[in-house]
Amino acid sequence: RIPLHDVCPLRGDSRHEEDRELQLSRALGWEPQATPLRARRHRRGLSRRFDVPAGENAGDDQHSQERRLAPDVDNEESLENGASRGAAIVLLLALAKLVFHLLIANRYGIFRDELYYLACSEHLDAGYVDQPPLIAFITWIARHLFGESLLGLRLLPALAGAATVWLTGKLARELGGGVFAQALAALAAFAAPIFLLMHHWLTMNAFEPLIWIACAWCIVRAIDRNEPRYWLWFGVLIG
Figure 1: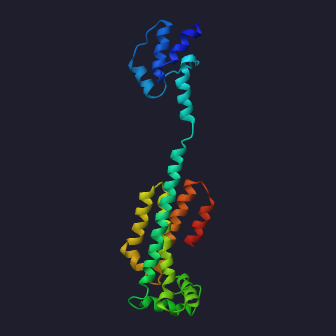
Figure 2 (figure 1 turned 60 degrees about the horizontal axis):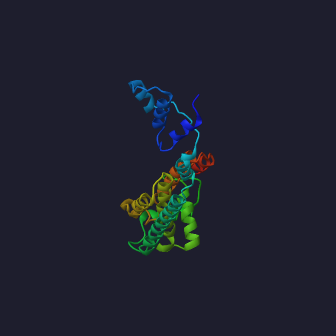
Figure 3 (figure 1 turned 60 degrees about the vertical axis):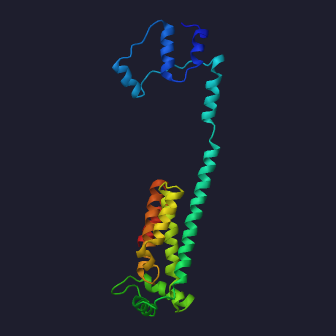
């Protein structure tokens, strides 16, 4: 047996478990040999640990342990501030997308596909020869709510574009992206030339990117948060 007063000082200035083990071994009267097996065991985390009781000189370790166990309030606040700042930037980009398309909604006249969907909206059906029925129902809603002006017809595509930008930023956040990643993803969805074209006209292409990005968001939420209900929303969107 080793007297307690011989073991307690070993805790005083020790900062690593290996140093404690060596000091305890010397107190027992034998010198350990640094063999290759010992080195391998230490790298794998298999080195034997000695629980040394704290003594009078263990105050520094006790306080450092309390500091380690204390919650990092500043870090949590910085993460919350970063999340709110990223969400604000994404929302501003989405609003800018909406305003941009509304400002140019009266340009270039009506597109031939828009005329075709206006005709389909006058004959609603469960399906058509060359497109599914949703676009005809969307056109019917636009006609009855906003009229047949260019601004009225192109309001819903502009809203779909803004929602695409916003949901792209949320997807980047869900994947672990910070403020810069969220802003960059939303900006890419805003400024992509193909999206600038698609969200200017009342066509199926204006709503397809929004549906697919929403599907991707549901998949990430279902897997990342282990919430099966998002698979149901995924099925609804796919349908």
